[in-house]
Image 1 (cartoon, helix red, strand yellow):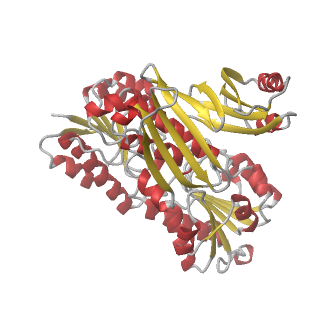
Image 2 (cartoon, rainbow, N blue to C red):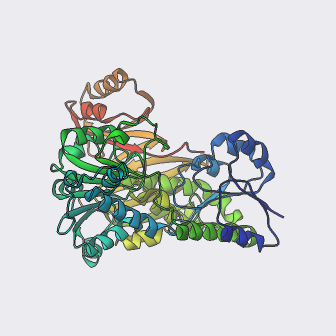
Image 3 (cartoon, helix red, strand yellow):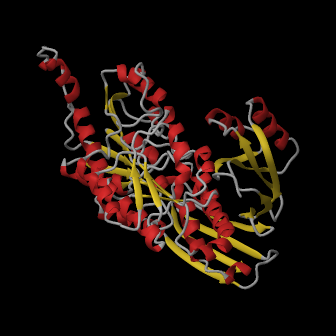
Length: 533
């Protein structure tokens, strides 16, 4: 009989689902300290958590019997996904169950911010009648800029229409047709920042969205803008936000999330009257908590009873026998998609996945799912998994083509991902070395052999002496190590491509310095995820 540990508080209705399953044993022990959790977890095959439990690589290393982790909620940033995958532990979440609650919280925060309700309440409770001190902002006919039109962003846009706001949005994965059906004007991020009276962010925290609303973004906004973040801490750069408030660019900010949670008591933003804040309450309503508890209990129960995989974050739904052969190709396919997704930030209209050689003898559908997961991850992030990737691609109007070719050119097996973007098209190809090691072997017209992992610089330059050395000098002087370097020439000559695995990832100033090198034509910082295994 499988044993499940529930290490965070779960609704009684969720517990009742497991109590009714006579073939499953469980213990509900919220509030365990990390040492006690590490001591007892090796006795369990399943773990159900919320945001309070941190599932680290060290914890997973000792949990030899663990087969599944169920996250009651969307965010899985408290789980080391790479370590779980490496140890064969399935990670599932409940991505749809609290979207309405989170969207409503964003609207509530926006209205409270616009009318200064928390500040006015505080003065009144302190015995002061300061009616003249609070001149709020009317939201009617104001422009709301929605960054990210996923489930939560779509709900916010819909509710904002009820307030008679004019809604503009940016999301490279949403088509014009879908935006029009929602009554939303689709614009670039720069145009949104320039036009919006209020900006609300609804993207996941990834390397491409960390600091998305930072100094450069604030410099493009008109004075008096309102900022709302109920998504993830780190998307809005807190230091830059403070400076924008002090300069008068930002009139007020409503924050439900912080880079460090809980934030320190002396956090400078909390000392500002222009800032209102809540302690990560976006999904915290009774109904939402009930929904996620029931959903994750059912998912974990069904996994142990029948091997059913729902909302898998790190594995496609395949049998154990198939998975053994597919796993290296799944890793390769996801890396190729992840690369293409970050090379096309302006949007994707079509993706073609071509399989050639011996890989065509396998069931390639999970590989196509892996490509889509990687492709969409830079913007969709944590609520994306192998199950919902095709649905999200369809929602965004992305055409998906899967094809097979008998001849794999120069390789035993080859996976090629061609993308037609809003502004450019591109091709990347990959193969396996020694049956298990993924390699990128082609990027557009450049042939190479690169290990797809970690922070990676993709630099295209004119092929002439001194450029490579200059790039190395800039990185070295900035304390950035190059662990691997791949150089390639274009098929017609004249152009060179460098793919550099670097640690740590360079910041904006370093990237700007690389851009300024004579001969460098483009610089892309790509996050290719964890170590290949």
